[in-house]
Image 1 (cartoon, rainbow, N blue to C red):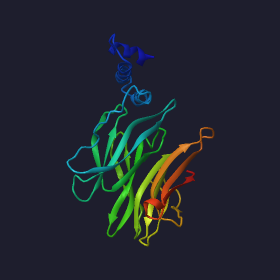
Image 2: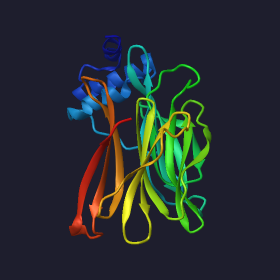
Image 3: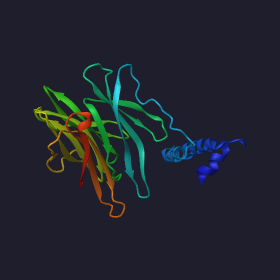
Image 4: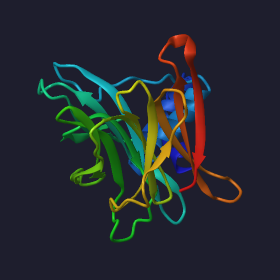
Length: 272
């Protein structure tokens, strides 16, 4: 109600529906610091009153590609909300090797100052919901990516704190003599699930997955998803049953011979 009343001060007699939507956004920014801007924008975009407005996240003279994004899933006593979103991407501004850069975006669309460089490539990112009590006093984004070690490619992870925007240091997730690529990650509860491709060089490929806690500990041994067909392009999503509240992960991938006409999609559910 306060937002609606405040928005009237920004309107003129000939205001349109679009003007009213923009006035609500401005009022939320003034009263609550933009805490609900993302939600308000989504409502009006879905109704065709506002259009998504593109903005630059990372700007550099060299190539920037393969973005991934997640948001800070903060849980308080009365609401479930995201304070910041974090975008990660491959960046060649230092020419060689390719690195991952990270940047936070406020739900209002404002860039949070500062970028972070991580020594990995081909990233994905997720943030587990948390209760804001010590020792996890702020959200942690898990960034997973690849790192070339000699002739092979391994999977590494780094936790990045939201408010302080510092890395807690990288740690290996999968190190073998074969290529391990294409990491995908999401989170539910206090558990992250990371899946990736293992290519042994024999013309076949399968998926491995690892559950990881918010303190970087591995929750059990890695698992394997193997089918007779070539497996690649994994994706991980997380959600909760609306009745029981139980969390689960869906791992999806493409499989089949490496030809456009021969690939199918498949998936498997996993419990946290």
